Length: 156
Image 1 (cartoon, rainbow, N blue to C red):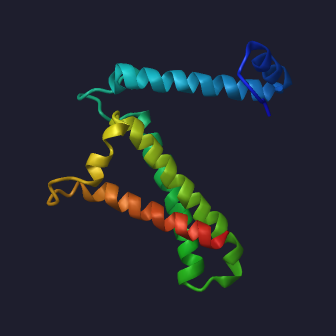
Image 2 (image 1 turned 90 degrees about the horizontal axis):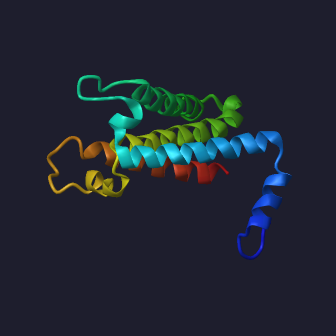
């Protein structure tokens, strides 16, 4: 662990100790941070080439298919074990709940990039107009996340 101030010598020591794979991972992480900043500064249209005429793309498909599909698989497995009495598969319920938790976290993390203004996310949860259906979805996602965190904490 590096102690003290960050200097050029400390950075060079850290980089020299990394393996080739570690250097690739750090390069991809820095590239991802640059792309996130570009997305927030220039907008979703400039970053993904989506517009009002073509609102769906790989971006939305990845969010929905990767995040929600992982979570659904985890819920089905955990439900099968706990609700339908498949107790011989109880060892599989822990990773299934972890998979569901990670799937929903991936979806919420991707949703922050889709919406474009994560600092205004609280407005969707605490909407002044309680008759709108769209204000219920973020509340449901928060409830599901809390449920998964509690289940994960209980199992581990």
